[in-house]
Length: 426
Image 1 (tube, helix red, strand yellow):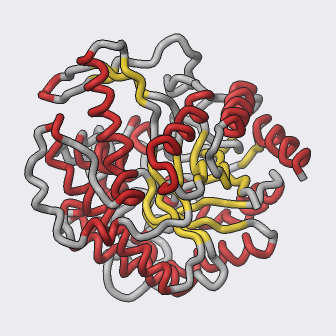
Image 2: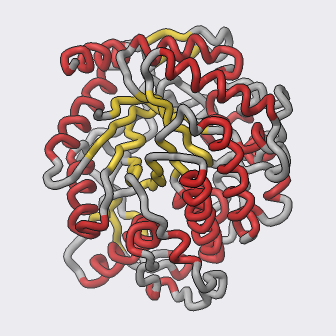
């Protein structure tokens, strides 16, 4: 069965940050620090999904979708990131899963979508190798409760973005500016993934994925400098996170002068390369690269021009999704498992969002044109307008409009279009 779904993330929609025994996450801390999030917005209430989830489940069903990708808030399950489970937190996800199963919607939980318990960050966060082991313990607790009804699991969401924005550049939580010294964050997230895969398998999980943010990398010209810069960027953005899980190796990172990989221990790559049942791919746009860049970087972003843009200023290049899928197959061959497009979407204002309809239609058609790739799912980002990280509530990615003052939900034109398209497929 092909999965037609939509996706959300816990901190972006749940709210209720002090209810049900939930502990603080790095995003609670970060969003309350002045100047971190646009206009001082926080996820304290967000979409109030914690209380309004039955209404949101009804919206999923009403659109004719057969899958829902959501994330579990680690600090809801383990307020300090370790120790026994907070049963009230698990109860919330238990009710949600039951409701999805009752209406024939496949639940697809993501175990980590960036809301690390603050207590673990206080001990170094993902710079600390111990966090990988704690993550596996947490995965086991969630799977012990839900794996009797949940068959499909995602370990991590976009470890590249979390490393780069959270630990490298400081524009996301936890707000650290380690630049290239953030590389251990990549390894420890991937190690946590491998350990979590083992825990999920032991609990009976049938389909296990990791979701990576991937981008086609376009050199700005055919010059040797730009070609080398594009290869270096592809290694950092794509291959640093795909190669270890699919091939059991790290890519060539010599362009960055990163020679001290002492954080990689014997046996780590074997753990990371646990067999996967699928690769989750989040696609938003290609990246055009030239070289070299500032601060000793071997590249700089030259910008993709000549295409329409979203309200976020992101270029709209539907065929980039086809290109990405086919390039994954060309790179990994038989090592590439089935692929799930676990996020694809756009920010536009308004309820009569014809631009979003055009965007989704173009990307779905591009996905269908991808040759030789076993694609088994497509998830629209996002079900609801929500807390868009450092942008606060200024970017609206939802199929459903949310009035953040009243919490009223209003399906947009794109919601009704998607319902009609799926109705034609059934």
